[in-house]
Image 1: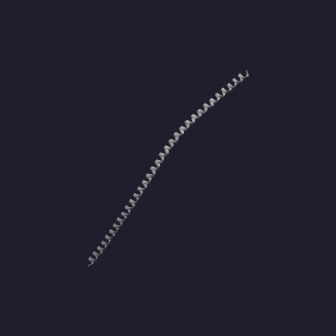
Image 2: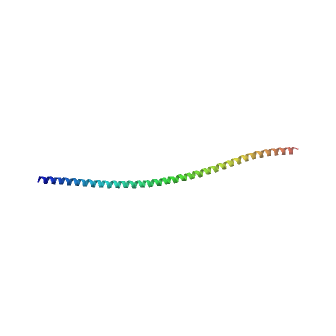
Image 3: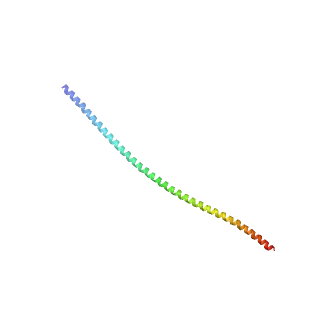
Length: 119
């Protein structure tokens, strides 16, 4: 009988241990499921973040290209304005030279007229 009791105690202890093992396995499984859900959520969030970042980078690249094109256009306009300025400046100098020549001729003509009318 004592051996039967010992066997029963052993069986109950073994059953209790089996139950604890089953509970631990269930906890491990639940924890693994939670980890998988968290990992998926992280991947989804990271994927969305990457999409947003890629979109923002594309917008920035587009803005940079637009600004570079505008800058090139402004540089061309500046070059054209400078060439125009140089031409106008040269024309002004030519006009001043012409005025000086004209004044000189006018003075000579006035002098000639004075000498003609004095006679």
